[in-house]
Image 1: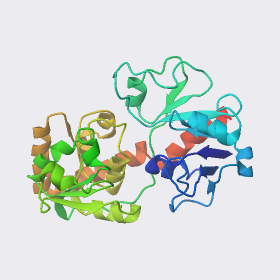
Image 2: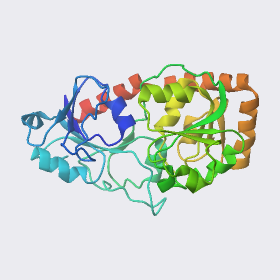
Image 3: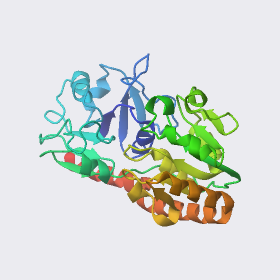
Image 4: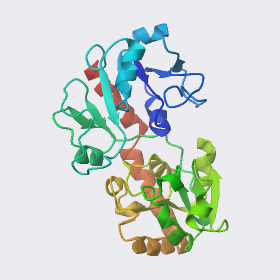
Length: 319
């Protein structure tokens, strides 16, 4: 089938477009949130940029919505109303913000468009009302078991950690940087030393790297550090576990389901995580064993094959 979706969340889209369908991504000369297109990603030929008013839009079978504004944007592009004139699915990537746990989902209390949550935490905490809703857990392309852990450092992937601050747990980094150097990857990290007060010797900024380079550099570090307080489930965390990395994470949102005890350490007490970090830094064999366990776990629960099968089944039922 032909599927229309916007390139909103790069890692999720990377997995989704590796299915058996055709994927049309709105593309504008200026790019941006409404016209990013493929953005030079190494995706299959079945993923194509499409311009507004393209004839191909007339052949779309289903629309994947990911933002409330996508409803109007899809109707404008297709001349058909999602959920009424053309099948549609709304993917909820985010945890609710604001009046938690009483946040009402934007598509609650309607019956035409099912809501697909990416985690069970999201499904639990959003008030979906009477809207049909389900969960399709994440899946990612397996980068391979690349872990060496040769550097007794932390790896951390965080986009815009200064702007997002407490959401990403950036305020917690000084405590971890006293234990071992932090290798920080991601976008919007330019002011991180000034904001945190951590020296450049203890916090090394790598910026936004290509997927393969990022995985290679992450896998050289002893521990993957996940300080996010409030997110559905960071896909960089699942990538780290696929690489064979042991994990230290705050026991919040979906992390408690995604990180079993044998794969790393979870706690809401940051001092517990500091002590766990010291253990892994001092015991590379323990780190390696936990990382191997992490890889085995995510290959089963968060495999690309399972993810794509779940989506194909849902879309076939809807279309």
